[in-house]
Amino acid sequence: YMSPKFSGFQFGLSWTPDSGEGSGGAATADSDANGSFENVLGVSATYATKVGDASVALSAGWEHGDDDGATGAEVQDLDVKGIGASVSMAGFTVGAAYRDYSDTFLTDALTAAGANAGSQFSFGVGYQMGALGVSAWYLQGEKDNANTSAVGARETTVSRMGLGAGYKMAPGWDLRAE
Image (cartoon, rainbow, N blue to C red; front, side, top):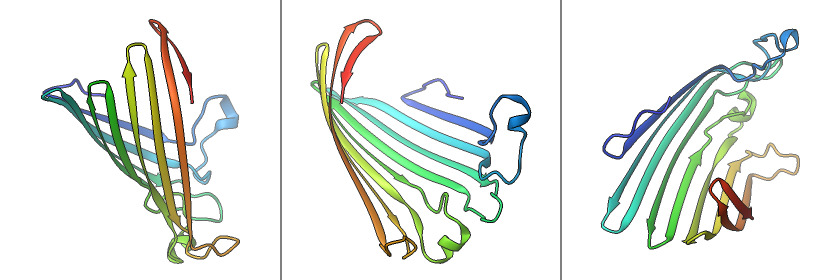
């Protein structure tokens, strides 16, 4: 559910009974030991406003779900939190976001050993000039392996960068490259 916007505020709410459910008959019969999450609740809020010539947007969200327990390995509950912000002015937009995964997807044994599912941050900048837009972004994610990886690496860091361009060919038809 997404609420109507009022005074720049909007909130969202979602609930998924079982993230492992699908369609297709007997092949998708519910199993309480399939490693999915049950009762997944998502809550988010946004605020957007104008400050002089600038547009400012803020967002925050949280998602939680109960572990459905795959056979032989108890996994921590789904618990993800995130925040974001952007500022736009004179065709330029700058934005940043942060997400924390807590102990999501880790077994109880890994958590007891000190592992953490990690976090990620990203930021980007874009410029829109008429029908043409260009952008650049950077993302970095880190997680603590607690010496549980095969090579004994204590921490894993992943970094990604990108450049993009887009052109509005006609209403509803965008040409994009990244």
